[in-house]
Image 1 (spheres, rainbow, N blue to C red):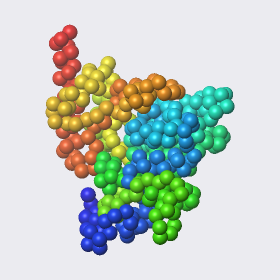
Image 2: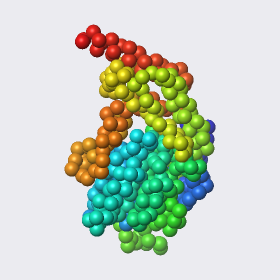
Image 3: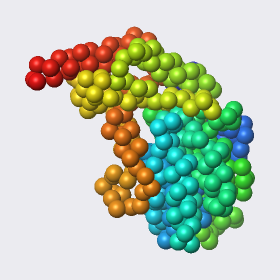
Image 4: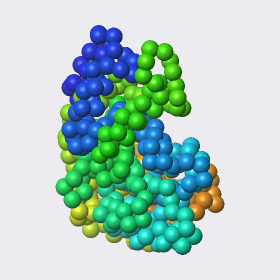
Length: 373
């Protein structure tokens, strides 16, 4: 937390604006809109934003939606909420994001059957934008809208432009683990103000204008509270600081592992700035001396919590049998990828401790392998 989050939240209490309307909501949406240059609406979660966004793009039962496979489940689940079928698209090694070449292959295959997807969900992974120009070009050629899932990438840029401003609709998350948080919440933005206002309408139970509780459409209880929006206002004021802190964390890890065989950092694409929301590395067991899972176990014993890179959607039990184009790259990134502690609140000494334990694992586990052999 910064200095002003509590003040904004307390103001909501003192003025009795604690529900889903109030000055903090109005100000947070306005501030966010200025940041990204598009109309914005606060919602209860990033998942809610994806759900509404896909609905507004016309996705419905029987449709297919192309979606990055290397992502968190919230990118794909709303496709199923709407009765549509996700079709997963592989990553590339250069960005870890959706591979435009594989996306083109998927479009060609579906065009040959005469049935194109209703939308494409492009994820900006771990704080880095996908290579959006070729993706936009492909989708434009086929006339298919894009939902940009920038839940992990607020503060990132693509060719000088903010992440989350490339889709027909784009979404952000303010979950507790994101680069800024409202404890829980999300934002939907679009260059089309009519879509944003429609999302606002649907998110407030689709209540028709007038005194009576009249409804002509099915809506949702998807609005953020004025209290949480106050936290968001304060968090947005320190966004650039948080981005710099995350980038400094990653840079410190990279410096510590420089020249260490078998540890490869997630690449930063030359077309933009990554926020390094999470500090991610690939472990090559042949040269590092142990595999990713052994490293995770060793660090856990040292009191260091780490996680694997996202498990691809096409490997998830819930999506077994769903179509996937490619998949080998995402599978390899998952098998070898580790996310190290990345919080903005970490001190340099804590980063150094984690790095030291990683290097100690290499020595200890390599010795064990040699002894066992």
